[in-house]
Image (cartoon, rainbow, N blue to C red; front, side):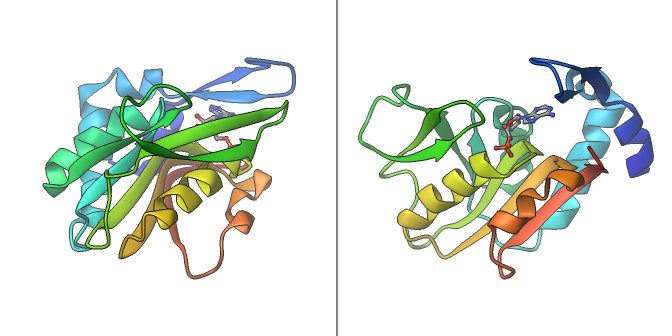
Length: 176
Ligand code: AMP
């Protein structure tokens, strides 16, 4: 299945959750078993030879395909959650959102120096969320980090927050 077909299944909702945002609704893509398994195949093909030991997904839309991909890669799954949700010892990272600040956390013992990590979220917009997750995972001293998104909004230039040596991949690209 080509990427254009998958892209066409993403529903665009103008002005949600606030005016000026073109919200990319992935629920319409996920409704189809055919699209879902095609998406899973594409992601698996891209990472099957990278030696990934853990997929780390960002709450909450990184929890849809993250575990699915982890199962196919025979890797573990690690949640990166919003502040106050994880029950054991955590490290945290603050980041700026359009309005105010947010905090994400990961369990301190979730990753170690032997891990090759695939960091996954549904969508790259300005990049703030993933940049915070990336520095969180880096703090745990892992061997290598790959970054993956289902969707990238290219005009928002979220990639610019990362150094050139960081391997960032997105499956479906929209201008905005
Ligand atoms: P950012 O930190 O600006 O890259 O925003 C990325 C996070 O916000 C992701 O977790 C997305 O789920 C969500 N997000 C931002 N913009 C959109 C959008 N236009 N449509 C859907 N989700 C979005």
